[in-house]
Image (cartoon, rainbow, N blue to C red; front, top):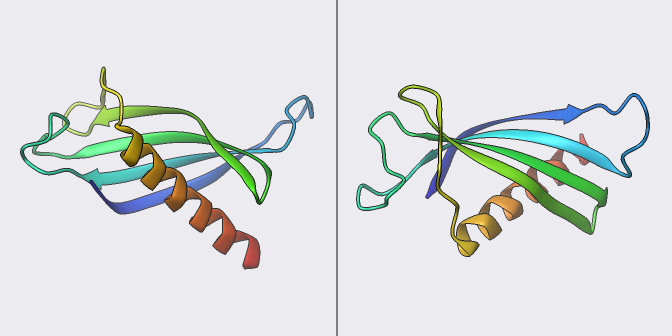
Length: 99
């Protein structure tokens, strides 16, 4: 799995009920042809990330979307894929904070 493009948006909480910050990442990913997630048009991963501090960032939820027809896929990521995505998200949030 390789992340080819991404977008990042902070999700605002006008009620201040949620502790910390929330972000939505949209990741365009390419997967190997032998992978069960493979589609010709590619896969998009919508990731909701929670951050209570720079040391405490977690994936709250994610959705896999087939870019051919924008339908959600009923698959889960493997543990190492989740770890890779979380590491990527943490890296992007850290670089956002320094800008």
